Image (tube, rainbow, N blue to C red):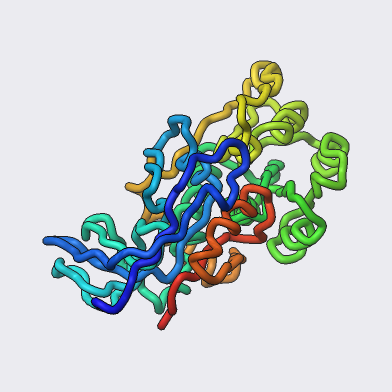
Length: 338
């Protein structure tokens, strides 16, 4: 191990508005040694997710901000290199949170062992991980879609929206996706089975929603907030439910954007509720059982967008916030022997 190095991408400066590559720095350090009860792992895949924009900013969020000159935090799938805990052995594959670096040390209780024979290990960062759990619980516990109801999903081709829309279809709802390109529109309809999709960059959203959802909207799965939410509110039905999952439209804003008119929420006695996936960790097995079975049976499809090389993580993350990714965005950092 003495001849190996640990590559890390650090937060060099807090972004103002859109992040730039100069906000990050690639450095080389020595590989850390695990202490008692700790595990040294080698990163294979790391996850890039929109919520990370809040963690590298200056404003307080629902989770701890990344410190300046520290490695960017994110979920990772890794191989155990050295274990000081009896439950983990060398070459085990684990889900951990080493972030943007090639090696990391974690406490054993923070790791989840993965079975490479059950699904591709990268799925633990997407459809069988935090994004999938977000889609599953936000839709089913807050949205509560019913047979024949109309469900609208923003950012519908992304890691969360694509899964939420397919689950709504499994539950018998009519599903409409809002996306940012014709390619993504075709994908969610032809590949994922959505009933309709709208390219928000080419189509006038209000008119397109009226055409696609002539009977109004019963559930709006909101990944974006902003102008899309404002438009949807004009077409919600009595008793509509809105899981508020993401704020993609606001993540790079330098000042708070103006809010939508919430009067339709009052008139239609609608429910809008914020969602944090960490509140559902105790129900993880329920999620894994259902979604794993849907994947195996072909009821649920999943798309990954893989970037190769740790050094490309900053550019890929910037593109994620601009909607350039197509599917769950991950970075392949090291060899995957599975």
